[in-house]
Image (cartoon, rainbow, N blue to C red; front, side, top):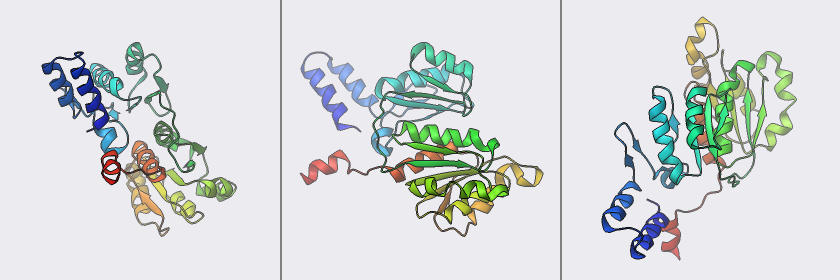
Length: 260
């Protein structure tokens, strides 16, 4: 729970802006807000470094709208993944600065542009067909306060393409590499750099790719020791964990106060 938020509420109560019942309800909602179909986790940014992200698939537009409406009251940056343009239209009616990113099927609300990374994050794809997953990763990393550089269509079938980007790759603090088919590119990139490589298997490929399982298994068996792997098509997860790796770490506020 964010101690600063509690202090604000206590000051408002002491100043007569809130009665006892309303103050108690708002303090309770600092943990999560139960709206029936969802328990909106307002404390996630404090615990994990970024507010709760809305996974749009399987939710009605009304449910997405209700969750976003509550998140945006407390969080400057909000993401909705795996959604559609019609849902974005509904969200924009209540949050006029919301952005629609068609390629990634992602809604982004970004009001805090503070840079929190130690260096740039490079996002690389093996093929053009991998861009939707990679763009989800890139947009997530940007929302979490990182500078992102994109390198599209640099797969191993034309190895000269990725080799021509060696200087950019070496300047990155963390890399995200998305690939389908046999999933070879993360191992190649991992062999060129001395920083973490977050591999993202995509579901791109023909029959024996098994919807990304072949790429996933190939990446899990990488002989490049700096390669780690997220789930199939999980661009968001790659962007999130790369951002935490890249972040300038600070002790939680309670710990800093204890040390002081």
